[in-house]
Length: 89
Image 1 (cartoon, rainbow, N blue to C red):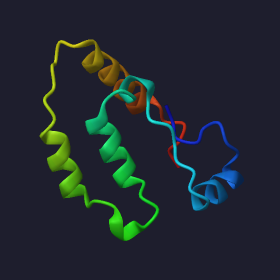
Image 2: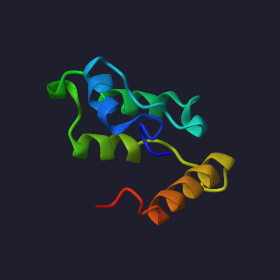
Image 3: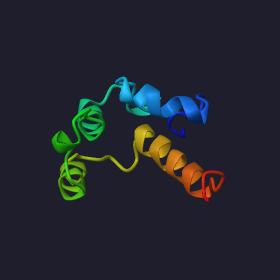
């Protein structure tokens, strides 16, 4: 899932400036711990956004079951993104 891929490039900035945010991937929608990190990182006020160290600490604190279906979905999503070079300059 590439954020804002459904929008024309020239419409993304006005959308974000008016409070628009990308959708959370469906496999994370029911996970409050991920949702809160996602929403904090997209806070309208840049000074309210957590720094990367804090994000990493919060992510590291989330219990993760490697054998779960969610792990498989996340791994597949990451592998797809790693292999997707269409957004590279």
